[in-house]
Image (cartoon, rainbow over all chains, first blue to last red; front, top):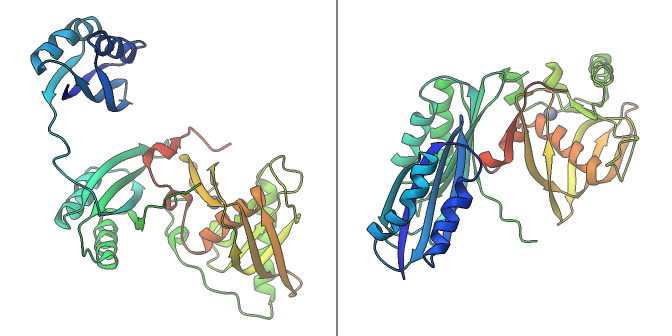
Length: 173
Length: 161
Ligand SMILES: [Zn+2]
């Protein structure tokens, strides 16, 4: 078995995930990991799958589905975990304030400058134009979290953002 | 209402014994709570007073287990938290844009001074514990958005109901 990453994007409608899933199952593949989202009616999905054959074969398997649903499709051979988060501490950066351009770029640049890896990121825009975002990050070893928190708050102040850096809580239930 | 900076400010303790100004804030809190149907708690910074006072009232609420009725808590402090933590969807009068899933302690013990100036010790659980924890966060300049761990746990809504 070989591992591949599949990216698909298009206008959302019912049946896309089912069609892609069936096509993968039809060639004996297995979905190892997946993420899907819809923003403003745009559907986007990233899958990591294991299946026999090469990327071209997998792409031709999925091509009819992509054409039917008018999806942009990309298939790549997946390198196994090129970036390891093992032994990195997980933190949350919550930032919110009145919406304006530059909020995401400024905060993510500060995180990149601290060698923090963003593992997950999402935002929400409220009806009253509050923009709120959460970065789930792994901090580099030896990161001074108090200093990074202060740096984030300082950058945020200039943008009207309220920012808090805190350790992600694990619920052992 | 957010982004009013008073919602992001740590509040000062109330000086004891209680004076008329403090009692006026407490009355204002109760009146404000009463003016919003279904409102189960409110904190002084939500009405622009940067002091450590909250009002709660979960009486009759279907999710309430412990129920200490209508209370004003001055200088409230959480003295213990149970180990069990639960996730529940919260909203807030002061930031009507969103609701969000927040994980909090299922049971707490809170100590405070009452409106009569006497010390109080409340054992709260379930819905009442959540209300107290949410309101106490306001006294530290924290909104429920500061407790959320992921954007997936936040839901935009049109208008506060
Ligand atoms: Zn609130």
